[in-house]
Length: 503
Ligand SMILES: Nc1ncnc2c1ncn2[C@@H]1O[C@H](COP(=O)(O)OP(=O)(O)OP(=O)(O)O)[C@@H](O)[C@H]1O
Ligand SMILES: [Mg+2]
Image (tube, rainbow, N blue to C red; front, side, top):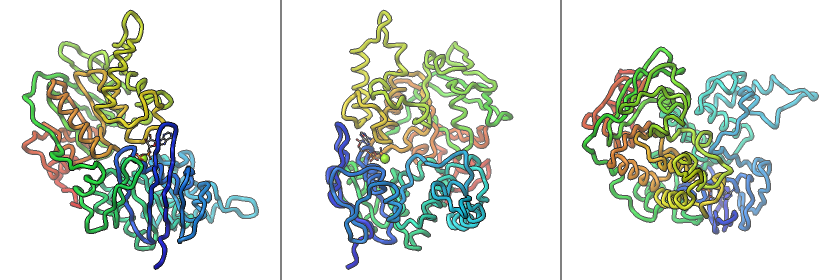
């Protein structure tokens, strides 16, 4: 029998206060697509970083083609043909496409960079990943999805035999995701092995030959192709079945809690948006990537002041210029790009949770320590934030747990109007359901909720009403009883009905 292309045996890795891997095994065969799934903090990224030489294990063994070997650095891993595409892209934004593909190992001729060769070879590799741009294109001109393809092109250019993708689709549009899935299938048939990490189980069903599940730093089980089904994956990940995934119940809507009037943003200065949301109502904001949803929510919250327009909150009319004003008026926004706008990475979980709330927790000018602590601890429990303790710096939490901290921070401000931008991106399925329950509970208490999401299922599952945006304006409004994938996609693509190809 031929040995697996790559094998990990009994890998152990600890961080201060956390045993991230407690003896994990993994095998990967040539030309196989292996999906690795598990809850936030299960150890997926840590395992991949070890295989790619970014981190070294405390103990355990790695074998390539059946031979034990030491992967002490990223260069070692590359020499063995292993490339990791990180959750956060690692490209040089100031360079062009060709330079990025060859970054760090530019071909040279007599001491000069061989531009002709860079251009020639990058054109070939770009064609292979299906990206139709000249190598001289500046990176900044590409969408996130296209940049992802550059990362893959870079890996192919070092002749990677193993391509590890850590949540590659979390910021991709529907079309980009479909294109990536096709590319993965092509790469597999050309003999490249792929390790694929994702919280989107539909995608896993579509691409994986085998699924390996991690739970709390241990192998929780594996599924061969015929057994890869959503319920089986969930059961292994969470350790129980999740019933009634969308807990949504329509509440009798109350008075109008917020009215946005004629909001114009810099992205689409010729368009304006008006809508209202009632107390206890959950409004979904749907649309394709680039439709202007994030810009709209940011303008309402005052992160980026609107070009014109106003927000009415009861008797109060606001022209939001800063989040401080909006918070005081009872509005909160959980941003999309949580890494950059949501967290103080070097500060602790508890401090981050209370950041947005400081102005309220003051007694005679002092911070109300005990109350703050109690609130934070209840958030950690409610959102099931996995941390060794409340003072752990958030930079050491797993990606999904960092996101939960941002959500908790804004929930702690006790808003009347809650704006959520892609609230469950990167979040595992158990925690997703917790977030839906929280939305439900808040709506039940009369909070008005507006949430933007690219996940059709969650828009359909959680909205009382959906507003669909296309190129900066609202192209339609659908009450719950008229919600369907087709009706939403039709409006999201500008009115013409173009149903999503079903996968
Ligand atoms: N550099 C670090 N220092 C301290 N703890 C860490 C570090 N890196 C990871 N951890 C901890 O190790 C555990 C596993 O984290 P890891 O990032 O591997 O999870 P994950 O499965 O990728 O989760 P997610 O789905 O949220 O990305 C977590 O508890 C995390 O907080
Ligand atoms: Mg991760």
